[in-house]
Length: 176
Image (cartoon, rainbow, N blue to C red; front, side, top):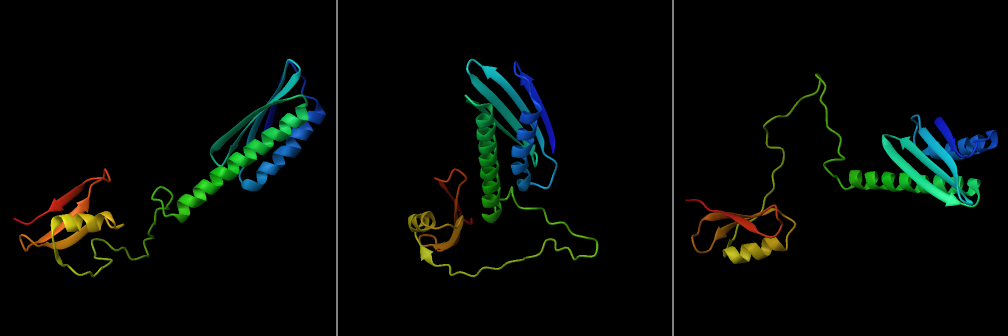
């Protein structure tokens, strides 16, 4: 753990340095990597101000607290940073669990593995039934699917209706 302590208009005594180091050890449980911590202590009027910033796992966390007691300011800053770390960690876990594209890891293939390219990997069967375009739109609106294949009741040809990216409108594919 790399800790840099700066005192502005206030001397950083050995006791304060040890206290900050001891409190920053709580942050180490969130990572196995090296943590960079910068602490600035200063006096503003009758209050003691502690500003602590930490870089953990490539993320920056910062807290500034002003109290009558410098040790209370340091405690509050560490609590705030710890809460920020937990929030970030929970957010990343939710992204991974929800299958977010950004959070998914790329699958890499070794030379020994078999690569599949330009193959049909999944087949889904469903019935195509005759209906009006308005009925198909209503059915697709209530569905999680992005498109619906149906037989147009007016033309008796297979059509595809799909949701546009705006999430409100629809597109229709009709054969000539």
